Length: 271
Ligand SMILES: Cc1cc2nc3c(=O)[nH]c(=O)nc-3n(C[C@H](O)[C@H](O)[C@H](O)COP(=O)(O)OP(=O)(O)OC[C@H]3O[C@@H](n4cnc5c(N)ncnc54)[C@H](O)[C@@H]3O)c2cc1C
Image 1 (spheres, rainbow, N blue to C red):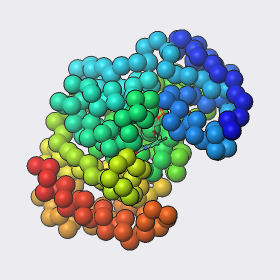
Image 2 (cartoon, protein in one colour; image 1 turned 135 degrees about the vertical axis):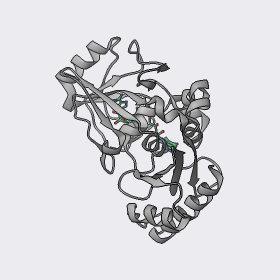
Image 3 (cartoon, helix red, strand yellow; image 1 turned 90 degrees about the horizontal axis):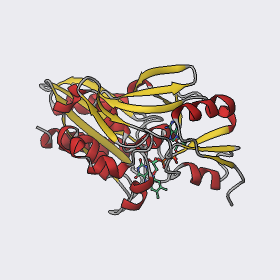
Image 4 (tube, protein in one colour; image 1 turned 60 degrees about the horizontal axis):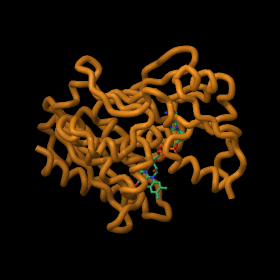
């Protein structure tokens, strides 16, 4: 059963920041609700207030700035990323990862920002954002700060965000537009499912980078490795970086084995 909460729907960013400053510890931001409402229903979260981010003016849409790059705002859904011309042409790795996240129906509600703030080790968007040098721009009533996604995740379902802060936008720099990459996700079934293990591989400017999900308490970044490194060395670097566990979905050893398989396949595929 859902416990009672008060629903707030600010229309401006200033109003939302004021609400967060006043009620931060007792409030949760609501985007698509595909993680949060499940957690409330299961008794894992019990906020007094839910503050909807999807009605705030200026929080919708993916935009582009020659100086900053690709900008993803709080109401942008996974399907919007998948369907964006700019993403598909310049940041295809983001679209490949988005395509592997859940079902079409979930992707229509779920946001990119909700996915990274939820900070599950099996986040499908984190591997691409790690490989593409993306940063989180975090806002509160006191101002803004920027954090690279390499420093954003601090543990299972934990991030650097404080209770009075919002992840205001994700910025992917223009330099990442030259990146070639792809993603492999192991699941228990052929349909949509959470990953047992996921590996994104990106190549740019003579270096190889990896973003790995479901293989440590947080999504893992491995880089920058020289393109001339033999596959064995790239696999060894990946295995040094991860800390997989055995759980109901598979064993630690199988996760390690599949990271190696995916790294080798992606090295051959992404040229
Ligand atoms: C059936 C099902 C299948 C799924 N499959 C996958 C999958 O294959 N891969 C995968 O990665 N995930 C999967 N998920 C998880 C989920 O869909 C994603 O994590 C989703 O992207 C979360 O986004 P949301 O907008 O629904 O976030 P919400 O549930 O609204 O919020 C998630 C968290 O982020 C916080 N939050 C939201 N917006 C902001 C903001 N702007 N600033 C600060 N905090 C914010 C919320 O307070 C909450 O703590 C699945 C979920 C379901 C129900």
